[in-house]
Image 1 (cartoon, helix red, strand yellow):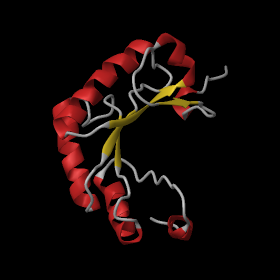
Image 2 (cartoon, one colour):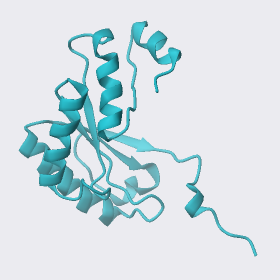
Image 3 (cartoon, helix red, strand yellow):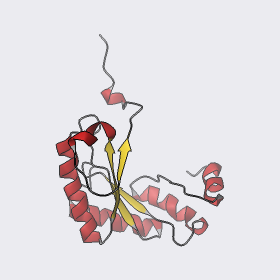
Length: 147
């Protein structure tokens, strides 16, 4: 469901990022906004290869086609977001990035940037634009239980 604030924000000049979710229902939200977006608006597919249905380059290509069709817009770039929440290590990022880059090659799209926890940056040597993430909350499943 789209709130009035989204429609107001889209009409303002400048950059806006709408996280519409990674499934077809999120892409349908993009379709609802499409007539308000400039023709050159970028549509990014955020890829976490540790999510179901995105574990291989082939699955990602299939999901990309479904999302683009539901959104009524072509995907213009991908964003690499390989993570396993609190269990993410440098190796998890490297292995996931390999899958994302393979999918981007199949799709013929650039990797716009890689999103990675800032705490892992010293353990990684990544090419391209990096979006360091700072986490300010824990998912409920990572909150320690008290006896």
